Length: 252
Image (cartoon, rainbow, N blue to C red; front, side, top):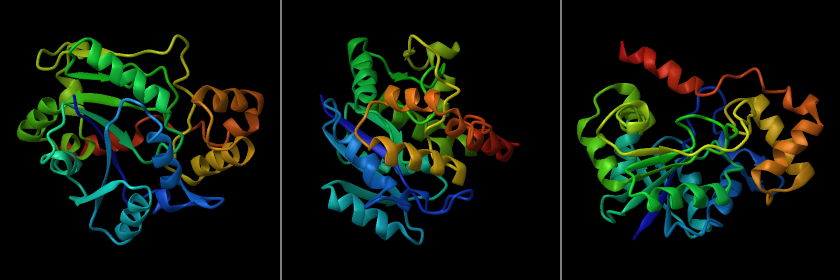
């Protein structure tokens, strides 16, 4: 079974431009993100799906430094970018990640992949019913599900955010097209935020990495935030999936 992880990375973010190129010490956020993904045991390959925007060459350069392939594709049709980035390889499973999650956890990646493999599911994630912190998001789906979404999804929000067509038609959501599973953490940590979409988010991540390093599991970073509520409060006013909610307005 071939399993390829794809992480999307671009420089054109509106709220925090070139956020993946921001540095903490000698590493960019993208460096940290890639290094953590590559520690996962269940993926065979990693692709950085970027764009032709200004700054994309720097993203490609970072990918190549880590021995990872980069693919340049559409800015707004991210679903197309994902599909075309692996069409030649036709993996059995695709792992969708996003580069605004520098502290993505390789153990969670392996957990979601193994859950998908164990039940012959079309789609498995820890985002359908969030219980993990925002910033530890992992979606795993069959390549056939990605192809079906690529062929059939028409809404702008579906094309921009890759998987809404899949999870909206999943069995967990009451659909019938995609056999799915929602992976939950025993405790609900969904109100914690260790993603980077704003300058406040970056300040939180910078503090965590400077204090604890970039090698820990996600729960250890959360424990630190519990012990330092003044740091957690820096970005806890942001809502989860603000970008997706905003993009839904373009469907009308």
